[in-house]
Length: 486
Ligand code: AMP
Ligand code: ZN
Image (cartoon, rainbow, N blue to C red):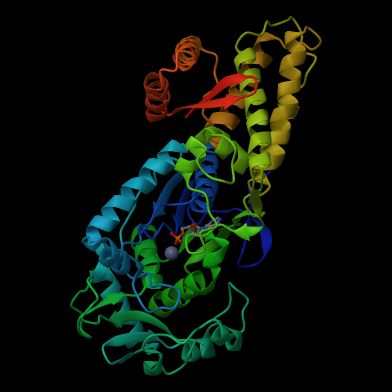
């Protein structure tokens, strides 16, 4: 079997994956800032790394997967305010109530999309002591300075011996353009410098004591501190969305170098953006779709509801490093493909074996592994899965044959790729229970139609609303009423 290759954003090349310690992988992925509901774009990034995690596990690695929760320190784009404190003030809640509310939402949503939980999920507020210690080390090493109760990283001085821009390939002069007129900017020696610790104004709710007075830690620092605490000063994989490459990940490298004098990460991986109408999905612009809107169909950009597995299949049809544009047509097409795949999987359990095999299962399986080993190429894997769908149908029609052993091997491999690696769930299975469920919903649709004929709107609305509450969405069309189960 060829070895796994990973595209490393540091070298901008695909490299053979060789973990620091044979058989073990340490992987860190930047988690969400828990101040609002995650949108489908956020979900894409976490799902891409979930697939990567799943494939590493499938290959037999022991993986420690760390994904943090940012519950303090992430400032608004103009750097004026902390996102969580701002939301807490707006909603008249404690910051920790905001954090709790959106952390629970995040976990629920990722679970719906069948993401595996990480091995460790550390929070920024749980690591204030470690962050203060790291700042002290950076100051001792001469690469940070304190002004007026805030501490800044000295980018210009760091860049004299190291390369600030090693990851983003930005020149240090260009970095200035990206640094806006910041709150307290006049305190900095240079515009490129970034905050390791910020003094808390009287209105700032989340605040801690430090050697520099009352304040709160900078966002970039938490990831440096938590990744090195749980994975070591040097670890294998660091991931996140493409938009985090600069400044966040560039700053992480600088901080780690300034603390430990080593490059922290062997393979930097970046997932590309989910767009809608050609523009990045984002919280701040409102150009986004929420997972719950996908499940109910309640968003102007879609005409019906879709299940989480269909949305997952839609994402997996694109390579994690390609931009993916969300549209109703695209997800509807994904639903057709998903159903075709699931129907073939149901048929797979009913196939008869023959004395000989006319189809080369090993060769097909190898092609699937080749796709995944080529920087987790799920679209090519899915093309191979549709090749398998064709073969399954041909075997069913007695036009291709598999002996017992090959059929077993074929089944096991398909199940591993579809369920273990891509992480789909067979929601359309025509197994006994879902047949029964479908039958029950059909009965309710008939009762609702009768109620509507009788102009008993109370009853017809009650049936519709209670089905929605159970995650079953009715859809009235020209050819009658259909339904989707989430
Ligand atoms: P945030 O909570 O804003 O820090 O974002 C959490 C994760 O979602 C980060 O890894 C971002 O890079 C990622 N992300 C944000 N917007 C998108 C998008 N439109 N498509 C894919 N990933 C995104
Ligand atoms: Zn991070």
